[in-house]
Every structure is written in structure tokens, then in C-alpha cells.
Image (cartoon, rainbow, N blue to C red; front, side, top):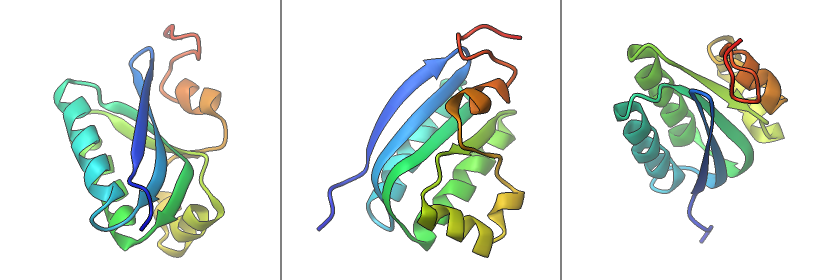
Amino acid sequence: MPLPMRITERRVGDVTILELDGPLVVDQGETTLKTWVDRIVEEGRVNIVLDLGKVTLLDSAGIGMLVSKYLTAHRRGGRLKLLHLTLRSDYLMHVTKLFTVFEIFESEDEAIRSFGIEPSGEAR
């Protein structure tokens, strides 16, 4: 059985970066991600970057949760963006056409700048 999803949280200005590590699949990582994003959005932190570089498995439940949490942030006036897609997650984003919905970045600094924040944490 795979290890459970672990999430590391950092902040740069008003951007919250969540580094996901482990499976983002039904009954594992997807519930962990839901709980974590719901909590930070309730705290008013709605500009979110999900770093998927260490996601070991991704299934339809994980994809569904990414879309759900995108909508959670969007409804509160925020944005959820993706960083460091793996080959599998990149493939799934293209097969599902979700690359037209999500902003996807290879560089954390670029992702942070896309919110109008310099990586140093200061607004532009």
C-alpha cells in the first residue's frame, strides 16, 4: 500500500504554496488535499499554488479534486495554479483538456509572479 499524501505548506506574500508528496488518488491523497485547501480558503488564503512534482500516483479522483479545489478558490475570489507537473499529470491535463482551465508553471518564481507578487514576498 502506498504511503499517504503529505503536504508541506509555505507562504510567499499572499500566495500559499502546497507541496504535495505521495499519491493523489481515491480515498488517500484526494481527501487530504480537500481538507487542507478548505482550511486555508476558510482562513482567507485563496491564492494557491499546488506543486505536483512529488505526486507519485494520480487518478480520476485526484483530477476531480484538483478541479473541485480550483472552483473553491475561484468562488472566493482567488486562484489555484499548478506547478511542476509530472509526466503522468501533464498527460492527464492534456487528455482531459484541463490545461485550458489551469495555469501551469515549471518555475515557482513564475507561478508566484503570476499573482502579482515578487518571489521575495513583496507586491509588484
